[in-house]
Length: 239
Ligand SMILES: Nc1ncnc2c1ncn2[C@@H]1O[C@H](COP(=O)(O)OP(=O)(O)OP(=O)(O)O)[C@@H](O)[C@H]1O
Ligand SMILES: O=C(O)c1ccc[n+]([C@@H]2O[C@H](COP(=O)([O-])O)[C@@H](O)[C@H]2O)c1
Image 1 (tube, rainbow, N blue to C red):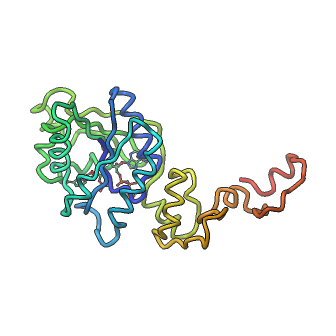
Image 2 (cartoon, rainbow, N blue to C red):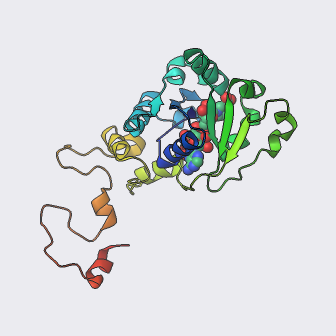
Image 3 (cartoon, protein in one colour):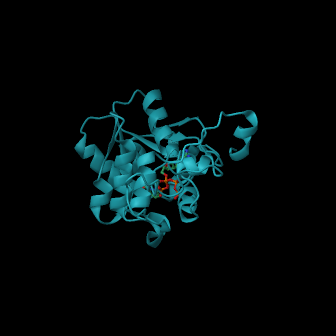
């Protein structure tokens, strides 16, 4: 399972989940969007239902990914100790793995009842650009738990954060390819992060469209450009 605020979910989350599923041969990865995250300013976090739906959209095409509402439905501050207890109750006998990025792992000693967490699940810390992946801060405690209580793994580096995606959306800069396409469209439709909705979904490219973003100098309406591409032409509007 992978807990997160997912505001919005992005490809860094999805690659982390996919890598851990592959390395540990997991049957399923359950994404668990937080209800009210304990360490994020709640007034700045999007509604839980929007974050839940974006997570459903982002994971829908992968048969091994699912999304749990346990934290969204608990209607109080989300603590991982509660998440793990609830997921265990729903999956009795399952060997649970909790996936955390290097930044989240670094703060784990500040989590509620953190000393119980390693009894409830195996933890997997994954690398994340800009953060040191380490367990030195846990060294005094880990030998109390069975081997494998925490495993650190390197995953392909994706320097993507939800903070940057939100900032881009506010500035009408592209979030295409940082988050799944359906999530770009959901952000636009729901006008999350101060984005403006398109008047109609009929052919409208929400927010900064991939066409406009990749080739800013080219027309993006129905007028086709009948020009044989040359190196000179290609360099004009592309980056
Ligand atoms: N690019 C990434 N690579 C690896 N792990 C990541 C990445 N982005 C987030 N994670 C991990 O995913 C989990 C959920 O993260 P979260 O939903 O807070 O996303 P975020 O990008 O860190 O958000 P924000 O920028 O709003 O803090 C955390 O364990 C976090 O460390
Ligand atoms: O249990 C806690 O006290 C706690 C404190 C901070 C974060 N967490 C969990 O860590 C995961 C990532 O959180 P966040 O805020 O970085 O999206 C998510 O599952 C949170 O519930 C948990």
